[in-house]
Amino acid sequence: MWQRIVVTTRVDHPVERVFAYLVDPLLWHEFAPAVVFRRQIGDRPPDVGTRWMATDQVGPFRFHFLDELAELEPNRRVVWLSSAPWNARVEYCCAPAPGGTRVEATYEGDVVGLLRVLVGWLPTGVFGWILARDFRRLNRVLASEARATRRWQNHYPDGVPELDRPDHLAGVDVGRPAPAE
Image (cartoon, rainbow, N blue to C red; front, side, top):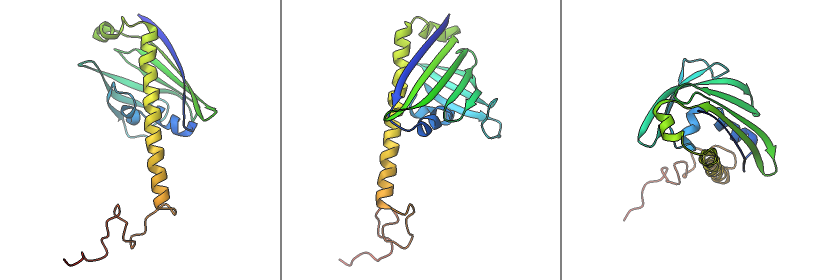
């Protein structure tokens, strides 16, 4: 059963930050709850043709497959191919938008086997709604990361703590003896 789903959304962060997550399978678990495992095959830097061992969980079932980086235009477009049971092509296109990034995600595939039984009956609109939730989670992950970066920059305006400052370990004063009681 071939399906094509297009999700268009806006993420409230710059293209570079959004794209960094979409191009790196090792980060997908942070915003896509079905992702259980990704490991790159080989030790080359990721590029077109690089493959990953993959495991997704749908309900109580885990599905093992391969992901391959098929096309890459940095900070603009990435295409992933997934083997059975997904038999999918996923394309993410990113473009600057007011206040963030416009993402158009196109999912195309022919789900087979038990996975087809689990998700094949879902109407396209429901499947699209489920996939769109990943981008809301990505927005939250990026917002949390931005807050942590701002806190660090506010506390350490020069970017790096000085080791001789008493607060170099999360505010713990390690340079002075404890006060006598």
